[in-house]
Length: 206
Length: 248
Ligand code: HEM
Ligand code: SF4
Ligand code: FES
Image 1 (cartoon, rainbow over the protein chains, first blue to last red):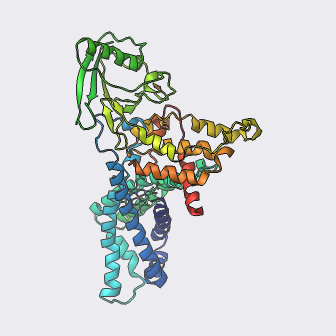
Image 2 (cartoon, each protein chain N blue to C red; image 1 turned 30 degrees about the vertical axis):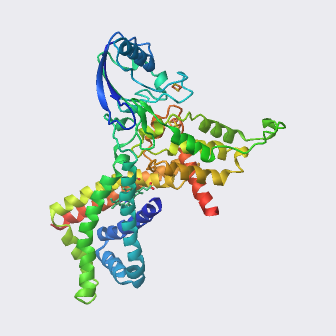
């Protein structure tokens, strides 16, 4: 769980960096997207690893939650969980499910589209198309709303999850308070950056 | 004080059980929670009813036998206390108090509020011991130097009384805080080194076999533990466990 999660987090960092290029420069974004889209190592080695990582993470998450639920077959009549733990730490499954729904839409938007463009309809590589495609996706306010909501939930997921992964791996030493702070900062900054990028394109182009 | 009690009554392990309402009057705010239940039981016995069964022994916070989930929290609303040390002044006059047993698949109910915690004993037996020479020529403990920091951490871990509040509080019914306290108390001391690797593997295996859930680091156990056992023990056990598995 923790290893797959840390892997997904490193991927998030790369993803946000590339997306951010779209705010800085249209050409840089096009160039980076084209490289990612046509580099064989990225397409045929990294991408399958990433997809398996995501599947591994959420399938294991479901199994874990299910096993943990069955460890208390008769529930309490009265619960006061808020007295001893945070809401988000108890509801990783639900924040995860929203992220999963988002990933579904995201796959449909970008991945299926790319496969269709590159392999099914065999269109010629066009290095200039990515930016305009991106801008097009952020046109619909409903879609942007769902995007923002998903990233707020990703933020919550990470606020518990990132520092939790270190605890699961047994990291606990004099650097732990700093690691925890860094993990929390990351959990705020990265999702907010995704949200900023989406809103930026939504409001500057239409 | 006058109180309305909602207490879980269950004849035996096979009974489904239910909440039964009781009104109790003239409770002194200086009573402990268990004394309040003693008063209730005296009244029930006088009326010819079956008294409420609950676990207790030392009544001074050291044996770990008292349990009780009180208004949704193990050992009640007060921090760092066992049920026997909880006083009625923590409650308000006319308050409704819901009293349930600690719940987990690994802790079957024996009767009413009494649960069978022998799963903890079996985990302890799986590895919570050290090999010492008990033939009569035992070495004086002070001849083995131990640095102060490790000694303190081992002592803090050894403060665990095996009450199971950590399991009761955890949404996953995980026993990680208890097991990690037991693993830590030995892993930190020179006497515990001989079985160190085997111990963590065996105790974790027994914990899983008993049907406890897995830890997702919500921290509920630490917040509810009457002895202040820290989550750093869980990190230490994870480290010990990963290390032991890599070596073997
Ligand atoms: C890019 C996306 C994601 C990232 C970066 C991420 C990150 C994390 C992290 C860091 C943890 C904590 C691991 C640990 O303590 O060992 C975690 C746990 C978890 N995640 Fe995700 N996650 C993502 C997507 C998902 C998805 C799509 C689901 C699907 C339902 C999901 C469900 C879970 C569950 C159930 C847990 C365990 C619950 C717990 O530890 O309390 N996650 N995730
Ligand atoms: S760790 Fe704390 S809550 Fe858990 S059994 Fe030990 S003393 Fe009780
Ligand atoms: S009765 Fe011994 S700890 Fe409460």
